[in-house]
Image (cartoon, rainbow over all chains, first blue to last red; front, side, top):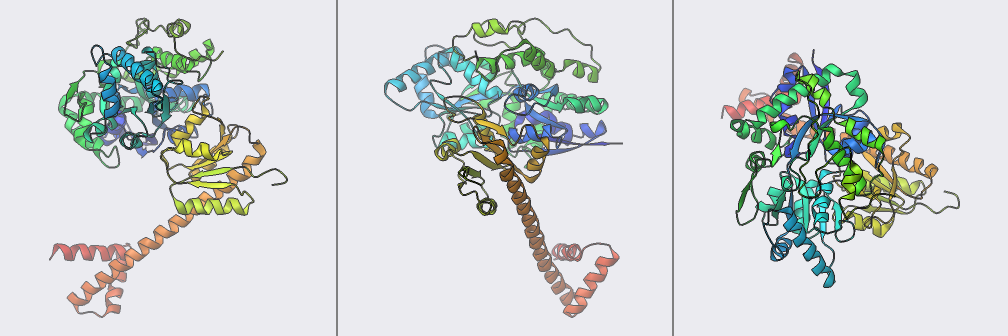
Length: 388
Length: 196
C-alpha cells in the first residue's frame, strides 16, 4: 500500500534531495506517493505545513526553529530529521558596490574579514558624503541569509540595523531588484546568484562557505505530532531522501540531476546553471572569472544530511543576537530538540554517534561556537541588540 | 461601523479583477478606507506611505514574505504587525489559507473589528475562485466546440456525410468508448494530422 503525501517546496537548488527523491522514484520505492507542491513564499510553506495542508516541506532551518518557539507566528512544534543541504548561499553585489569594495580592499578578496572591513569603509564614506545607506536583500526575517549577511558585515564593524538597510525580497525578484537599483546587494541561494552574474548585473562577492564552514540551510520539516503518529512513513521518507542525496553526490549523475531540477514544474532554470551550483564551480563575475569550492553546497556528503543540534543552537543564538527573541535556557533546549539526529540514525539503521563537542559551525570571526555557552558567544561580538 | 473611523485597509494583489471584487465588497460593508497596491517594487515603502491597519495579500504573491518583516521591530519598521489573522484561532487560518488570502493586522486595531473584514475577504476570495473556475470551464467548452467543428469538417469531407450525420457519428463513438465528444474530435484531428 502506498501512502499519499503532500510536500511543499520553493524552487531552489537546495530542494534537490526532495525533488530527486520524488522524480527518480526513491519515494515510490519506499511506498510513498508524494505530490510535490511548488510554492511562492516561505510564509505559505510555513502556514500550509502548520495547518496540515502539507505533510512535510522544504523549509528554511531557522523557520523550523522559530515555528517551534512561536516566534513571529503561531507556535507549532516542528521536527527536522534530515538536512536538505549545508551552505549553498552566496552574497552578490552590484557592479558599482563591487568596484567600491575592491577600491577599499586590503588583502585577499575571498577573505570575508577583508571584504567586511572594506564594506565598513565604503559605508563610512557614503555617510560622509550624505549618500543613502546601502540596501541588502535577503529572503526572510528567520533565514540563514539574514544571519549570514549580519554575521559577515558586523565582523567588519557595520551595524546591519543602523548602517545599512536589510530588506526581505522574494528570491525570484532579487535579480531584477539588483538590476534596477532597489538593492545594492543580496544574499540568496542558487540559482539566483548565477542568474545575476550571467545577466551582467552582479558579482558574487562571497560563497557563504567563506563565512561559515558548515551552515545548515534547508531542512526537511515535519510537524512533531504528525511525526509521532506516522513513524513508519517518516522512516520511509528519510530513507528515500538519503538515497536521493547519495545519488545527487555522485558526480556522474550530475547531468541527470540538473536536468530533473531544471524542469518547468520544479526549478524552471537552465540545467547548466543548476549544475554549476551542484559542482561548486561558479562564474563569479560577468567577465567570466570562475571560482571553485569543494563545499559550496553539500547535499549529503561529509555527513551533511545528519541534523546537528549545535547548528540549531547557533541559529537560535543569532535570533537572540539580533533581538528577535530574548535568551532563555528552556528556549535553547526547544530549539536544539528541533534537529533530530536520533530519527535520522534510527531510519537509516546507523549507529547513533555522540554529538561532537568541537565547533560545528566554523565561523570566520569570533571564538569557536559552544552550544552550552550562548552568553559567551554573544559577548564575543560588539555589534548586536539582545533584548534586555 | 458606529462612531469609530473606518480602519485603513490595503489590498496587495496583482490580479486587478480579484482586488476590485474585494474592494467593492469592503466598501459595501462600510469600509471606506480601502487602497489597492498592484506594484510589488518597494512594497514596504508603499505600505508605509498608506499607513494601514489591515493588510490583505493573496497567497499566490511571493511578496507575502516581504510583509513578514513587519513583525520585526526595527528601524525599517514603523508600526509592527501585531498578528497574522488570529493567532488563537486555527480555524480562521485554515479558512483563509483555503481561500488563498492572508491578513496582517497592524498593531493597534481592536480584535473584534477584524473578524468582519476577514470573513468578507474569505468569502470574496472564494467567490472569485468560483468565477475563475466557471470562466475556465466556459473557455474549455469553447475550445471543445472549435475542435468538434473541425472534426466534423474532416468527417464530412472524407466520408461524404452531412454536418448532422458527422455529429451523430462523433456522439455515438464517444458514447461507445465512454469518452467525451471533444476527446474523440481531438483524436480525429490528431489522426488526420498524422496521415497527411
